[in-house]
Length: 230
Image 1 (cartoon, rainbow, N blue to C red):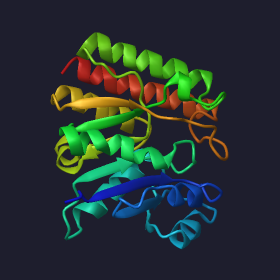
Image 2: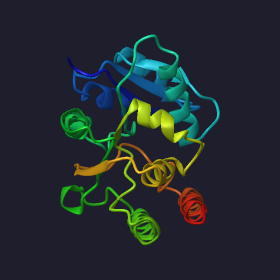
Image 3: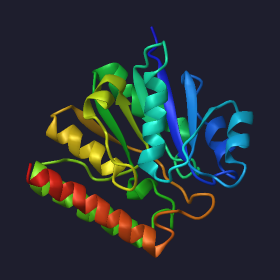
């Protein structure tokens, strides 16, 4: 029997990309949930027309949007078994979702991270500050937690009961690193799967601005040091 898989896509002004993202998601997914995070364009309309369930989260922040999606799933009658997160900017390859959920289905792995491997990454898809930030964060995680993570990529799959057990809190830029730190601290099993990564459609709200890059860096380091001394 196939597991029930649901996808959560946080989206802020992704009208030009969201339809492409939704159309490339495999048919094995039970429901695609797009969380419109205070968009001022036609993100919601385009997502709905493409067949997604659309939720609205007026509070800006990646974590706010993800938590909205989780709350929606929690209140459904059917039992979701796997949740996949990916971005709405078409930088990920949604059709590779099967690669991420396979270790969970076949080998009972708790969490699978889609790693933006350099060899599979389109030139310019990650900004220098992103590459450095990922290196610094994962190096510190290795130092403090003996982690084997090499990336903080947004494309990820997780067992729903495990996701609930993490009791996610972060509302903004620290969402991805919080999840990975809690996976490590609670000793859940995890695996990295290399995925392709391309230049996004539109301008990044985080790495595309100096303010976004600085705040993301601060938030990521805050989470790492917070857990280092727990």
